[in-house]
Length: 197
Image 1: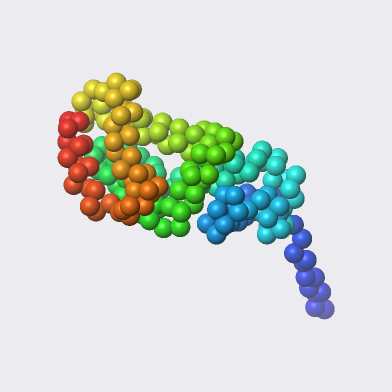
Image 2: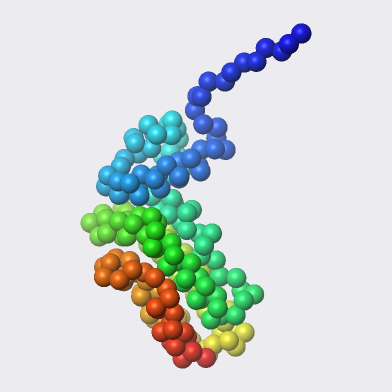
């Protein structure tokens, strides 16, 4: 006797599929429409996830947008401590410049721009994106100091070093006078890193 096959109706997504689905959809919305061009209601329509469920996980649109950014970019921004300091910094910056040159660059630049007029988004950029990234870089600097790969630096000196290094990429990303490409920047960054030894 053959078993009767019962087709399942689409219904709402399973809970384990919810977060990646919402984040992926939000990323596509950001890339296509920009921060001010979409709403939580758009995410609900596209994903079938209830608005109340979204707000339970992400308290507001700004938090959802920045959670999406950090989810997409985090795998590319690690600092492996087992590799030399200069190589680790340059490899990570090259990875970041590659990301900035594509769709993600348009997303993050639109968010930073929108954050200038949106206090909630500006706070979310700081708390969910900038500060965690800077803390990871600062720990990598301190590891290099402890292992005598670079000279001793105070916290404020490390902050200035990070501004010099990463400011080159963000300046090009936001003003777009030059592409945030890495090859032409690398020799100058290498020269700066040698001053830290």
